[in-house]
Image (cartoon, rainbow, N blue to C red; front, side, top):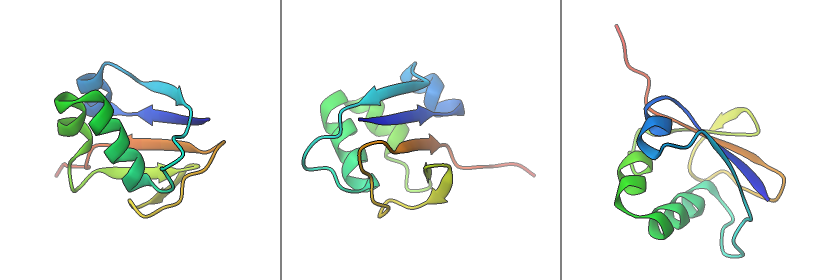
Length: 84
């Protein structure tokens, strides 16, 4: 099982801040996790999590879509940072 945290506008779009998910057998990295969530949950999830500039952390370390995900991990998704 993994814990997935959604922050800021992603949390608002999905109406979800954290969830626990049994890691599917065919999911080994963040990219596969994202594809799984989007295919299972639909268009709103695709819009929220499909951004190229999506920021990702695994076990509180910033990473990219190629990062390995395994049982017990904590994954977090953040919208891109903007400002000036």
